Amino acid sequence: MENLINSRIDYLRSQIGRTMTESWSPVGRFLNGVLLSVDHGRMVAEYTIREDLTNVVGGLHGGMSSAILDDLIGGTVFTLGREFGYTTVNLNVDFLHAAKPGDVLTATAEVIRAGRNLIHCEGRLVAADGKIIAKCTSNLVQTSRKLPF
Image 1 (cartoon, rainbow, N blue to C red):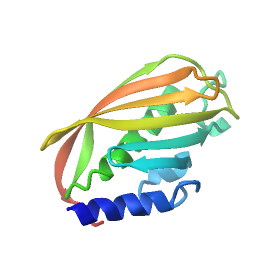
Image 2 (spheres, helix red, strand yellow; image 1 turned 180 degrees about the horizontal axis):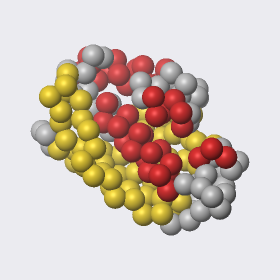
Image 3 (cartoon, rainbow, N blue to C red; image 1 turned 60 degrees about the horizontal axis):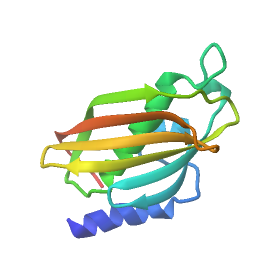
């Protein structure tokens, strides 16, 4: 499994500084962040807020904040090198500040506890001025689907 872990992390690290147009995740391709760092159980990416990610009042839509955090957490779980896929059981998000088009936000996802079948993660979406836009906790459960990579 160690070689698998290294190959996933090596691939993800090869994507650092690039947009996520070739992400494994279709949602990740839509959100199109830029990967900043990848470690075992931790990923950081940057997202520029576009108008199509906003709500009727022009702020970052809560669903889009949630999607950013959920997608990055999912990618972070891949760094663990598990044989099977994992799916989100719950995603508890606190929306703390607004963000608007043009803002660049940094998202961080970390594995807090990785059990055999359940993985607990935390995520943060932070503005350039240090304000936390959103933070979350999430639990993911192992599926019966083996990963192809």
